[in-house]
Image 1 (cartoon, rainbow, N blue to C red):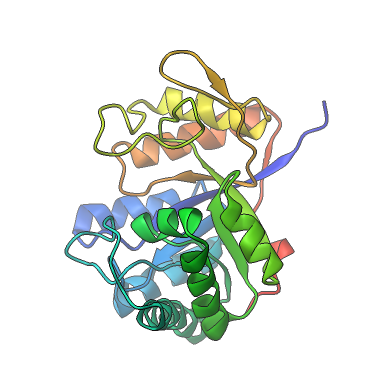
Image 2: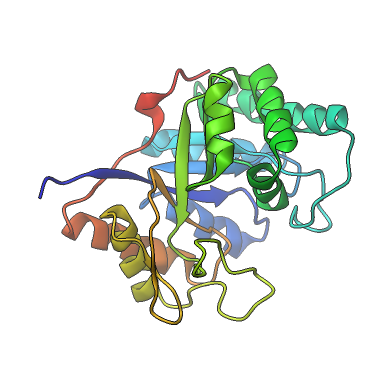
Length: 260
């Protein structure tokens, strides 16, 4: 079987303690794209610059990771905001990362909403359109990353964006193909070997296995490993090794993007 390629991404710039920063930067050894927190749920000018510089040095594609403006709740609760206010918030966050990237000679190639905004855009067309407008104002027609099999990808594509379907290497899937909510036990796969196995299955087009053994179909252009998850570095190393041994190339989405 011909080897295929897949992007491996992680969310960075979300941790501020010394240990967290060191672990985040270690992840760059194993991934091909990063989504950088840009002030909504986490991150500031210093953290954005740190991650962008490190990613540029390793040839890792750089993306913005905007969220609802909810630092207290880490962007994990949907906010009741007027569309104009949410659009402005997305624009401001993405623009902040674009500026940080330009200062070091890098480009922003993609945008992946964070947390509650990611899921709200997948469920609600009006939120998907607000996110798209906010991104366009700050970064043009970069790649937009959203959940696999979600209508949000079709909406963004109709608006002129290139899109990337995302699956999660380190999250448990339910029988309907949705992610298990973080409020339920077992939402995050705890062992690197399980994360690696799920990554290879999805990359091969074999879907994900639920807790009861059901196989759910998932098609993805990019796989995510959460940078703030337990054993994130170990999981990223295991995924990178497993994909490589399976003959699956790890490549960023940047070649598909008209980078801004």
